[in-house]
Image (cartoon, rainbow, N blue to C red; front, side, top):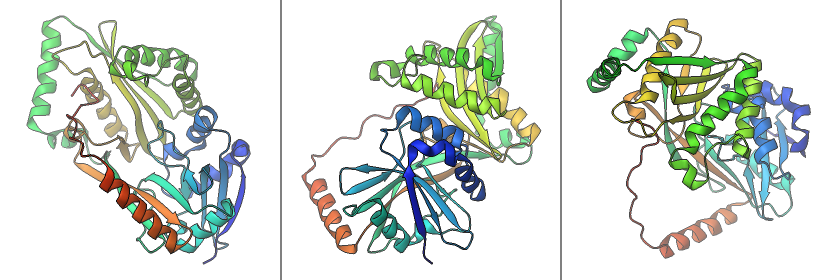
Length: 360
């Protein structure tokens, strides 16, 4: 089946947003691939040289992607660090990611010297993992977790570990004994997004992320990006910023976006000076029951690498994957030799100690 590719500058993304969203919705829809997420990602983290590509097989199938050249030989599907998955949308009737001829044709359309296309962090929930061949390689990326919303919260909670259930009860009792009032809210009004992102920035700036320069702040690119995303999603009733307070002290936040029955926890942060209790866990223990009760969502996605604290909330784990499509088989062989030499020359590195990204 022949796929015909069209390519335009990604600066024209807004003009093609409806087509992009139609492809997202015609596959397995994801909030992370909605134009209200991809558009801000391009605006705040794009280089300006990205291309928007659409492929059509003429039989109802279609695919869309945002691609950037890396030097003269390699093209990468757009995926800034703020996006857990690559910017690739695919109609359920399409098998473009499995069609090696289609990917080779795309490489040719991207430039005469383009030898390979990298598609990082593809979710098998959205696009099935293709078989490897002489011109296509796949590799594991990372494991991620989700919670399927089925049945009652009581049944879900009963299936969690005994220690988690006991600890949540113990922590609430401890806060009651100390006279600390737990309070939770959820920001959904776009007019309140600026202040909520500022709140989140203050939490994260006080955390370990500040020393690494990765913390969200209202006056940096990350802060502007999240403000943009949440103003858009909240305007459609699809943004949720959950907050937990100990008395009037902000203790934890989850930044969440929703689309087509899927809630993605984009970011989470908590007050690291709080000891003995887990405000992020207490916060989710407050809002998860309402999600189950309303039955408006099919699943909650954590994304990010599975850590020990994730496994307390779910045992549903899957592996995201990378794809590298080569223009010709001989390019794949050369790249394999290059990788083997680099691996052989690399010094042995001791595995770092495991660090939790939550207060679990």
